Length: 142
Image 1: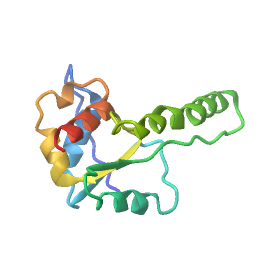
Image 2 (image 1 turned 135 degrees about the vertical axis):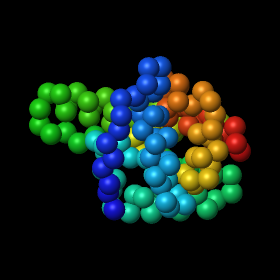
Image 3 (image 1 turned 135 degrees about the horizontal axis):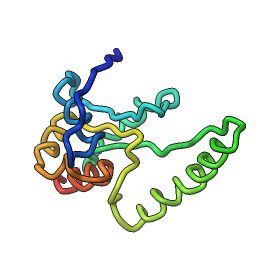
């Protein structure tokens, strides 16, 4: 079920996306929370596939890498070329040497209890990059 929730203006000094995430977390009733940007569409079974990784030991969060569609104009060509050529290079190669230090914030899923725990960090809502902050806080909580 999709529910549109009108939001008040974001307070000064607070990341607007984090502000919305924290409010959405209070409304979430499922034991898992998925974050999906409004300009993002998951492939068939994308959510199911991501959720299946949460059952593995040591996995606190699963995320997807973006793939942009070219819509036949200059701007979509520019964005799709950049994202599609950089996404894999930015997120995959270093994972052979280290656990991921960040995530792609366009889509991720984690357990609600973990999200509630990391959301209690007083600096969370003030972070400029919410995806990096979420990744770091998840890592801090094992």
